[in-house]
Image 1 (cartoon, one colour):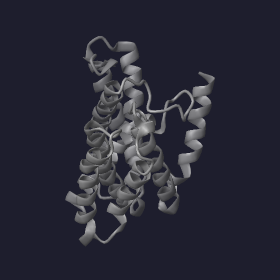
Image 2: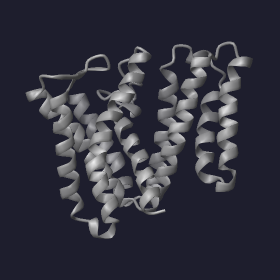
Image 3: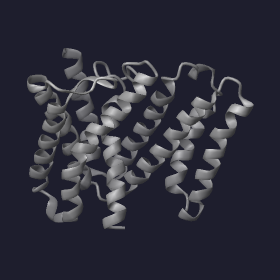
Image 4: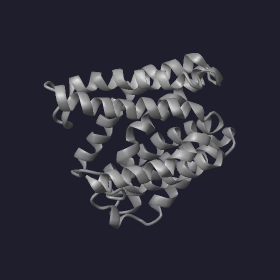
Length: 256
């Protein structure tokens, strides 16, 4: 427990300034998360060590390019990335078709997330709402599930999650993010901020299940042990990443 608490405090110290002020600090944090989650995502594959050494760095580069190259060429990067992963099993014996699909999923999913982070860098206070909704939901689900959980939600994917915890997390995440956002909501789009308070707790719970399914399919408990007592970076930010993806969708619909 002591190790877990110390790690949690270290995480808070590292992310506090980027979340609070955005800008280049948030860019650096996003780049670190991108590099670490890509490695963790691929590392859980049993034959990862026999993959060509260029797969990991090239995947990260492709994700970064989808955000920073001129929009006119974005299609080309996506098309080249898809063709690369589909063709690689043909030429590399130790890179299977399931490996191809697995890496392709990361490329598509995290390029969209990384693109949404670009919106957050420019308007970082939305990230406050997302963080409180996400981790408020996580805390509420743990508390309600621990004390009142009786009906299992999906034992096949996550044996400990209950429906009571699911709904408790949604309510707590919504209330916490809504109350906290009263401090700064005047500077945000009211519709977007309110939708984030309502939807992020739901997506956080579902996102956690989606990433749990990935770990179960690869027969691992955590994506890595980079964060003692907490698993890997991806174990800590899985729900947050899905909510950033949600923010990107809502931002395009309501603001862009």
